[in-house]
Length: 137
Image 1 (cartoon, helix red, strand yellow):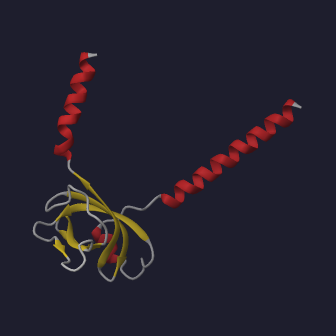
Image 2: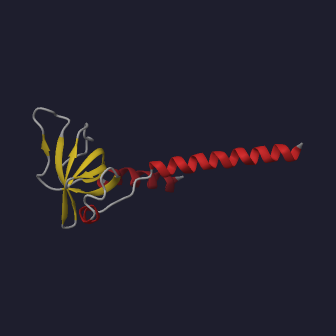
């Protein structure tokens, strides 16, 4: 009876591991560079990607009739790419900030449905404070 119980437990554990692995694989987005997207334009239709870079200074344009529509240009070194985003932008979204966008590359424009900002200087104080607290303990 113990062998049967062990077999059932092992089977359930393997099934759970399989389900988790399948779920993680579906949610994983490949990271792409601007150059890669432009080189494979037309072959990437319908595929989702993650793209990172800085918002080009002076490139943010908000639609006057639809405040949720934002267009901007993302920079990676010398390469640039226009981005369209149709949701509420994060509070820290501004010129020059580092961003990560997720979405599809369509007709030379990145159609983002997720926009995340990153600002290391905002968290430096928190990290230093945490380190000081940890050293006191």
